[in-house]
Length: 302
Length: 241
Image 1: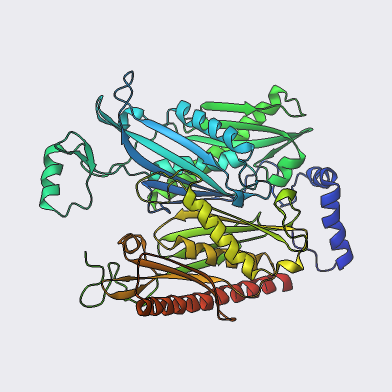
Image 2: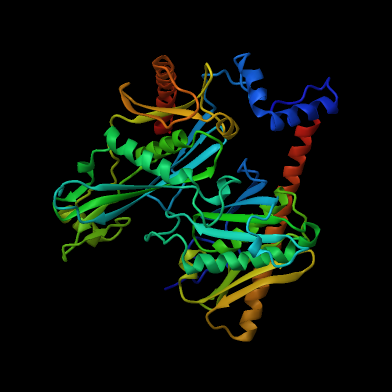
């Protein structure tokens, strides 16, 4: 991926590319022995991360997250529903992760990608168990009406570390979310109030508004994740698709903003990890969580 | 409801023959062989092209000495106003077919036998004219992938409301119940590849609306050409470095 050295002639440049395709593992190991990766990153460094909130105007909250080339677009739509009888004061979040065929040459139309439902479930578990969202904040009228948030995450470009980018985009979308203004009308149903230009609207808002103005959710314990690859004695943070396809042992660590561990995921692989390796992954995740916290903080100020 | 006020301004302040703002960018999906983002006002579409590559399902191959072109159109769950969509409804299937046939007409499939070209379209925001935005995005993505084409396929829609032909309808104008004519043309060859209309129109009015849509198409073709030329210049700079 680096630019060819202008002092070398074309034939040497061709050989490097061919070597990379035919002997990928040896190509990577030559780099790892110098503590570098082909894109010149040190082993523990993640790729450049960008978060852009509020891109989808048809949604109540949205964000685009890019880690290197991996791009995720998350958007939330809120709908009113009746809460269940055993939790009448709580709303609900439904999360779905999609990998449309545009994101990768390996995804075929009509057949969902293998990774998609796995990531969907892990994301759902992580977000709910981290306690980032207090479901009681989504309640409108106890026992009768509560908010259901549909979070859809679309992968627009799959270049490794899909879980990390998806989690980041979900968190950013939640912090961008503004709950719409609604009121209880005469039939006892919740209706949306738009604009507020009519006098009728104003009187409804004063008398029966359940949500006086667009409000944001309070997010505590925001989860941040980092995926690492274990290979022999090396630990590589934030892998690309090429690295993931050659080296198969992935460890994902999720920490929250108070430095507590939310989740740890290692699903098999040829490398067996000693606890020292896991501790190193957690250390790398801690550093990454600080970076991500700062990026999200800058996003909010804008 | 008044869609064109007495001064000739539409609901969003445009005149009858003004298009919405176009934003077009090439090379947005790094994993794809060719990709593009195309925005017409609030309608945003991403197209990705994979190919030519090996045919994955031999049973679909009908003509041996031509490339197989596959197209899939899908809308994101958050792309439209209130309701969540079913993932593969009839409208998506129909649009996939329409766009596939439009692009197939302009790709030189006889130059790439025994191969498959996949065109994937994802609508991120829908505000009327998604069909046209998808065809324009697909053209850009195919050009970015270096697939040989006869000409650029460009598309635009026009309608007829309050006795005025209107160019490039948005969602509100489209659902007003008037006619909606979508035209796809190959500008240099000056040939029509796609023509769809619903609702009733007298013949002379139809010809006016069709002419307006074709004008819109030519303007889009200019814009697409500019974007592709700028992209080629960028590639040249990077290569020379």
